[in-house]
Image 1 (cartoon, chains in turn cyan, green):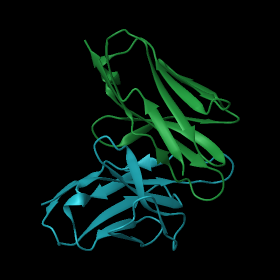
Image 2: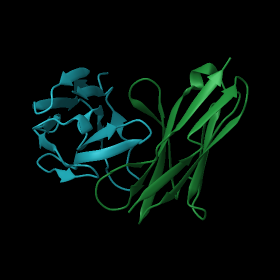
Image 3: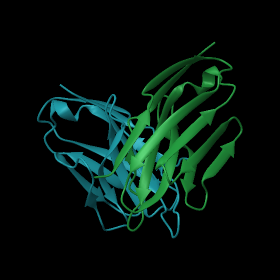
Length: 115
Length: 112
């Protein structure tokens, strides 16, 4: 059971470089999410996609773009990386359904350092 | 703006102790409160609490939702070193997507 798969696991970039973080889920979930986690800050939502073909901004979207390529895949792009984007990035997916919904399932994260 | 506050931020105990972690929230149109455990990598789901399910238990872990006080507690009895982790609390709203608003987490260290 793969669940949510993120690539790469680690990456070092120089300021100004661009990079795309990949995420794929095999649980047939409609919704997908990108979070970043910084020390002492918990997880903060960057962008989310409630369903294939739709994307919306979260709490901290500046400096990022996303693409919901199909139901399985949701990528996060840094067009011009900045040191402030050094973080651990988590992708998650869920199937909201009706009523109380379902919990999100997370990938193992991508540790990104920008020099 | 939705807000989730966890306390304490860190906690060190000895194996066998019982711990209580706290989570308070302010959210418009509250739908659910979730607890996650994060060790080295991905947060893993523990419990979801809603108006129709305010108490959950799994082994040594249990959680209660107090809708009047807008808070939740996570209890761990007879702690083990494997319980060492960051425990995250998050809330969702009614209507729309399942966006999670997280607290900053409680780092629990269980010493042998």
